[in-house]
Length: 186
Image 1 (tube, helix red, strand yellow):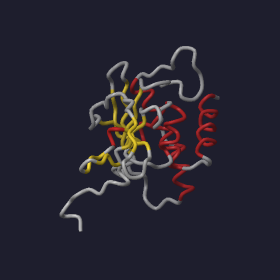
Image 2: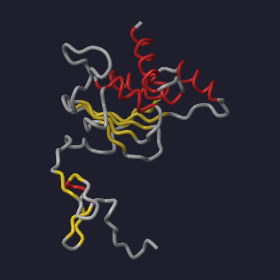
Image 3: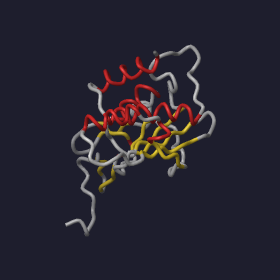
Image 4: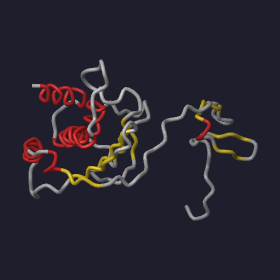
């Protein structure tokens, strides 16, 4: 039973089984179906849908479900194809660079008054199409990740990606050393 093995891999990566992990697990499986994703030739197991940036996921939360997305779809922060647009919503946008297709999955409300255990069982028993509303993506497909030159901060001496350096007079400062000027933040 491949799905059970995949679930166990997700739970092992996450550290435990929970309703939140189930949400990401079901969202990943639904995205595979809706986008018509196929595993990359010669690759099997976790992450076989995106060895680079072929598939991009924008998560609107930083909750448990994101771990399942990493395991199943191969999206990760380090590769640049797992991005966060934090809205606090259980919503996930998936983009296929190969086909140009995209989909946003938004979790539907569950019945009120459930315990954590009841909520877990509810999500485990639900089909993805019962759990998620399928919508158009809000953000356009982000450009592939870039590699930036490193610049040493003039104050602390720590190396920082050049696009995050701020100029202050003759100094090049990292975000930790830079003090933004805003007369309205008191």
